Image (cartoon, rainbow, N blue to C red; front, side, top):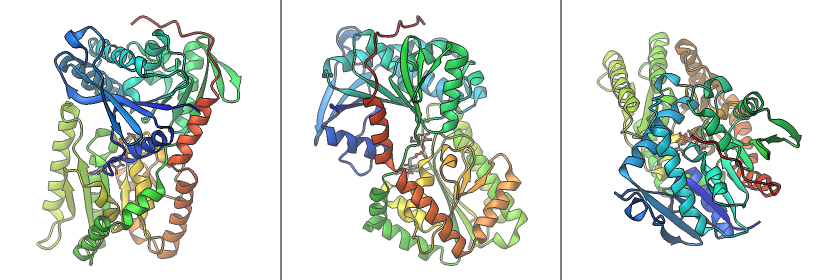
Length: 473
Ligand code: GDG
């Protein structure tokens, strides 16, 4: 296989250990092939990456070990419409089944398309004939079509990190046919779960008369595409090595000292309405109300790292959380016990495994989530001799794989409280059995398996006879 070219909204320097799971995984693949990683620089400039707003895009290039990083700036107006408006104000809520939070401002889609065209124009001159291009996530759905329109014939794959909703929910997006036709310009398409994969296949059958072509492939819009259900995995060895490193061990020791008389429940999330944080805090309050023995003996540590603070739905949830946590601490707290420790801050990645390992229960209870890597990180960080228990929402993509977790419906506050109670009481033998099975799954389907399986499918993509006739907006 040729050189791998990864494209995502943001790029990360793979040499830095602070990078998250995806950055580590992609970094590995790119290192192996001496690859290129292309995306937005994270900076705004008035000419929006193109001198005088028109001409050839200005690309910043930097060598990071064997990997080349190439980025473009965005104009403030493009940032507002492409990133804040369309990506995070339309696609993120709708793909997480939250039509009520979508802002279908007609101006956003133009900016979304403009930035995808900018990306295509900036990337094209950097490509070699034998490159294999792998595009990531919802910000860049039309990128393959824009590249094809410029004459790009290399195989292009796409991985959607967030869920794909059922066809009727997708159909609420004005211009969904344009968007989904864009998705059909890729050769291989990866989805986090079988549910997402089924939604895609139903959509292309119902709306675009797609026909099955054998081996999981479909014929649609005169092309052959290969959609796959491929859950993203963790670099288990990398995460376990992080758990053994001094910073994580020190965090673990400190937590054990601080909470020697109590069981810690932990939640680690970006502050986002998809993560079910208010429902989780309410369920914890219900636990204290219904099971008085948990008072004084259980403490919930909830990290909510700041995220997308320029989107208004995020400030609403911030206020709701502060008030819910304040009420529980006010009602149940004692001079020597604070039931909820809520932190609207980011914890250093090197310390996270120590926090996970010192916790008896992890609460991973999103209302909808593509996968949820925190669930996997929690399992990987446990001491196999005395592991903690994972309480997992059935609406996380991870629920399809992590069958031995304690499953909850996060909308059912009483039911979730009862399950958290079970988790707190679970005996050592059952904890070990469940953890052993979960860890085996994590190892079998780790991030290397995920990358290799996707790239193999993309490598088998047939040369396509023509580019897609691209729909007008
Ligand atoms: C998207 C999809 C899918 C969180 N707080 C802190 C922190 N984190 C790290 C976690 C984990 C990552 O961020 C979060 O990953 P998730 O998978 O839970 O969720 P999203 O950010 O929404 O990611 C998701 C994922 O893409 C991958 O495909 O699983 O469904 O929504 O690695 O550890 N890291 C640090 N401090 C924090 O406070 N350092």
